[in-house]
View 1 (cartoon, rainbow, N blue to C red):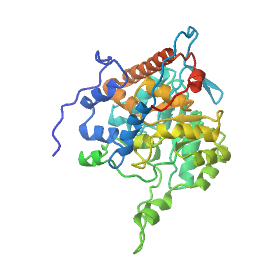
View 2: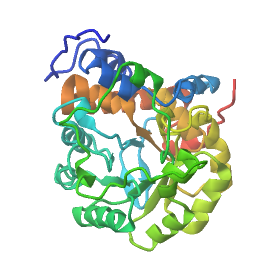
View 3: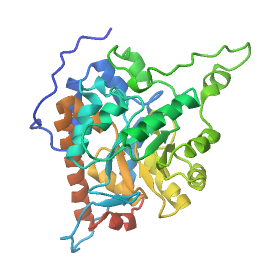
View 4: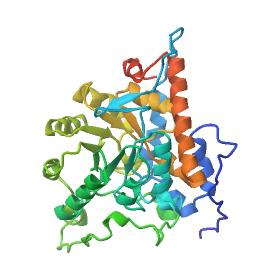
Length: 371
């Protein structure tokens, strides 16, 4: 039986005991119902990959360099011809009303206040149009292929007309095992937490499976997107398309050859195949496969500016922050998310200074070895 939980209300100030960005993770447990926290914090299956994502960063120590002239240092990047003041993006995270009544709207306000590019999820609690109207900072739209190309195309055109600057196609979670922790916590999506972007589209129910057929292969996977669907999508828009969920260098090479704008190395924060390698361990090989000038973004497991430094040193142009944004949102709404982003940026700049790197380009040249 799940015990009752006395929840704290979101704060309108920054708690005094937040010293590092990751502090929001522990504090958030007092602001989110236990079953919802289990769902947010969990991965898939027995959470092996979830644990591996964070543990793997410790294999890459950063050796300090001394007596460097860093007075002109900065964390700026240029991506797709756009300049950003830092390489930290907000990953697409679904159902943010689980953490705060204002959900994605408050996250967008924080992104706007910190010059951060936010990637809005297909499964957001507020519509992509509502999110687009908040602030002036760049926004990208994360797209899940729908059960019909008509519905997928409608989402795409809505994103275009709302002013989103790029499309992020997530391809690694067509099917997954739910987190054992969320199952044991008896998590159920609250009635007021709905994926409003797709609620008017027809949802295909489970197909009839004949005797002897697999409910996986002949069932769920009948609707899974293929390379042909990605090729089709590329013909439907002039917006740059990033493919999220890439872990194998051969897949990365194929995506590049098709004309996609870039890739996002990710195992969905441990929410796809449980037992997949940590994303950070795949990064260097993928960067080698696609070359130095092809946009490669990274997510999964980042909890600090030191982690961001390591991801960039291993080949990332920018990183995506997932769970930390939700934890900060739960604690203090837009103010919390903005503060979390500020802390991450300062943690990154501190690491840069101690490692003797004045720019993001310097980090890319940094010789990051395995311990």
